[in-house]
Length: 421
Image (cartoon, rainbow, N blue to C red):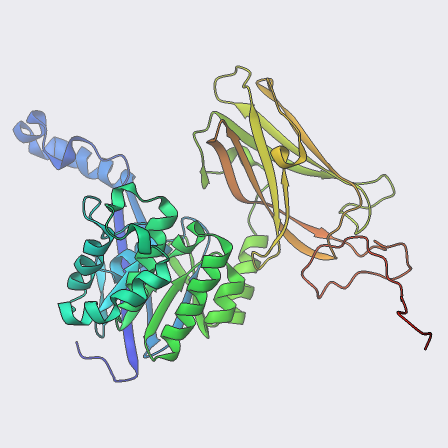
């Protein structure tokens, strides 16, 4: 199908079906072969019970040279959609039409051969994109310089760290000039400086007239880069339009989620040897039901172990973000000097925060626990809470909620150098 000259990507009625817990690899049992009618009916029922639609009738268009954002919670179907757009997996129903070559950065090292060196993988990826060797040679020095891997280009990439993988993979995808660049949340692997570098490169790619599809939980970055965006939820397209409008829909969807019983949450990571069961906030006894800027607050984290036995050497963290995923506080046991040894099988972790330094507004909580560097539990958007205005400095002035920054005590004075003026 031919696209109009102003359209780079067209998605029409895309759906993707998976089967959960698929057994015996699709082969028929002997009993099913001998008695087909009886067993086929049971098989169809089993298949229906296992059906899972990761995407359901999703459709949109992306303009030529547009930077388009895709947002949604974990499990919304974002990565499945990008894999379909990148032709990694086919849709169950629907169709996609894309103008030109596609460069995709979906996971760290996607498309890399671990046995080949960094230099060889640059040429391999360029060939996959349909580029001639002379074109790759013309861009090679820029790719290496951007990735900051000059010393390691003759090293097999199987020896690269995840950060090195990501730096080279992004540099290849962004510099080999595909007409459509697809970038997933993989940028979170890099450090803050390299993330800023990548965002700047994507802005450059967009200004060059190429099309960018950007998936991220960093709503501030999506708002900065993308003029339009789409919101996915449970495999369905919930909203599409100007980025500010779509982000408002995303935040409203977050606020509407039932987050109290963390024990029932399935969208979490970690080995499960310890699981958070609830998150509660305890404030003063003066009638407030939410934290107040400048006043003491306690965070209580319920937990239990999967074995019913005590667990040793646990580290825990509470990360507090703005609705746009801007980091405000990272409360970490190791950084504070706390050591959580020999935790009972079930209990409560308490984090005390003297003089809440958050300005008034809404916040999101992520929870983390690990043991010996092995993740136990990681729950994003574990809770939401609102901070009320308060006199943090004791000056009679309320904090400025328009400034997304924590508050710290500070003193000002004038010092006159030399002769008095």
